[in-house]
Image (cartoon, rainbow, N blue to C red; front, side):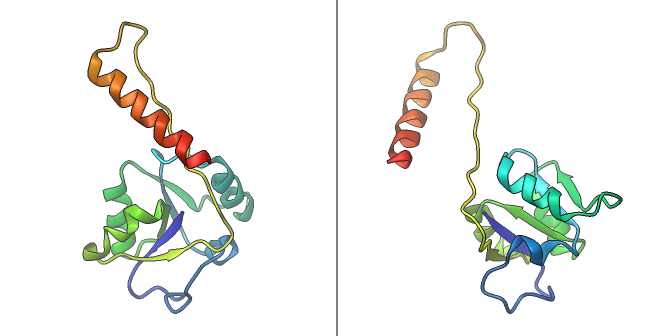
Length: 131
């Protein structure tokens, strides 16, 4: 996981950021990337009377808010790296690692062959990553 920051961000000179570095800024989170440990740590930093963790409907919307200077974003490092041309810089989170949780949902009906191949491949990748 990493932090998406605007070009003129106050902490742009730091090579890595910690969760505590983020507490004074609005934080955009793309809800499709579930990371329970990270969300718990972010929520624990924020004052009870202040809502600084804001949902983004897509990664692109999160990048738009960040590049416009409305806040910072937290999501997968690989996504932020691809948004550099949109005016978004990236800094890794120093106090990780964090796991993104992905759920594969399908109807109870019989899956077609393409869905079965996708499921097998996803399981192979997950098992290889666990080694």
